[in-house]
Amino acid sequence: MQAQNREWLSTEEAAELLRISVQALRQRCYRGEIPYYKFGRSSRFVRAELEAILLNSKRTIKTLRRLQEVKWQ
Image (cartoon, rainbow, N blue to C red; front, top):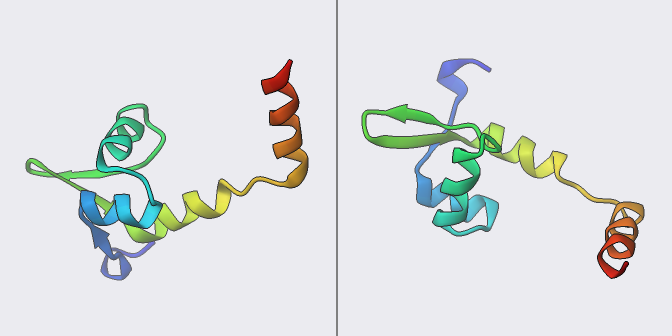
């Protein structure tokens, strides 16, 4: 990805895009689940990377059924 094509998001904007709380976003960053960049004391996120995470987190009906089976056992 070229640097000039990156759209940088703040923590609040990234959390809104992912539809999670800022606290949940920070926890996922700490666990290494979401990539971020530090600029001084600020964390920044690349929109394309977050959108890729959303696309890769798609669950199928088969996956959801398997999760339900495990939950109820």
